Image 1 (cartoon, rainbow over the protein chains, first blue to last red):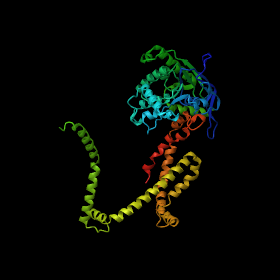
Image 2: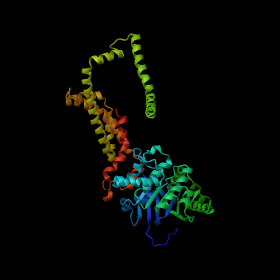
Image 3: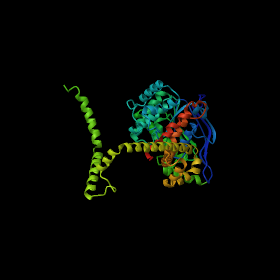
Image 4: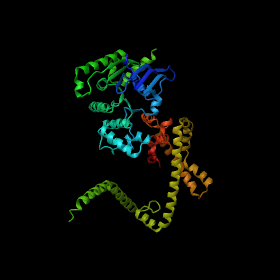
Length: 286
Length: 203
């Protein structure tokens, strides 16, 4: 799990990050155990692992949405807390979290309003964002009038509206059908190429991780550790062709092998409830 | 000659027609219901003081409209005043309970118990407090009726905010830290608004 030995400033740096949750009437549950990771500017890094391995928790720790129990988190060269106060990152959740009473345009403008941008500047940026996520003509629609994929595009536009250097994504396409997911994968890559953002992307889909990423961070079952990092050397830009290249399948196999070695067993595919039970059972054993 | 106006008027007509069709079923029930009422009361020869005919009601309204209008206005004012007081208090208490959850577990049982007291038990007390003919005593009763459902529904709205929604606001550094500017005040607005189901479920 060696990371690059460059002197480049990191976009995100984790040192010994550990997270324990208090459990009523039992020993504390260790969700993450001393995670070290460096992410460099412009990278697209996926976090993949079985359900309950703490990959979403790790993403929230990077965003200072939950505090780590131990360890150090640096985002853009400053403590994660300061980075959050400075709004250095945008976040996209599995649920688009749009406000039903705001139109698409006003949902995208929400962070801009909170940052005190004036009306004209907001309108200009919203137009650019609608263009970017190909939702022009839908600015006056309400979220419930859009499909799931379109809603998630609004959520991405909102996350990017204030041009943060870092984009945190927590299974953003997990609730979408396969065809929509593949189309949004392509769109996300296009946006990433154009914006030059650093992306940290949580997923439980192996092909999605390999297709999107420059590196795939494979995590082990609870307590979550980094079980291995797979460098994805597929040529850029990725296209529909990428998915049928032999190298693509080799990398998918490699990620799957590391997941299995990390204790994910055959359940590396989706199946959260089953996996949760399995992990919970193991947690009580020691 | 009419060719110039026609495209507009035809569209308007069609829209008006669609709207009219929407109200037709309700209108039929209204007219049919009143006709049935009139017919049944006449056919069964029901006494006036048990159930008057619609025609007799209209006639009484026409004869006493001055008196009824004045009384109606007074009732309306008292109901509106009571609603404003009750709903305002309900929202205020809900905001406090949502912000400090431990207060909820301390106070909610009593709020629920108080809600079970029949309104008729309150009425004489309020009359003693504010005076029998004082409109405030009527408003107080109305506000007690309004308070509980508004408070419970507002509280439900305020506490059912999606966790991701709170995380999103946190990611915008809302309401904390020196760089948050005016967000501390604005942030609650979007998170409050789920509580805007209030009026619908209030009496």
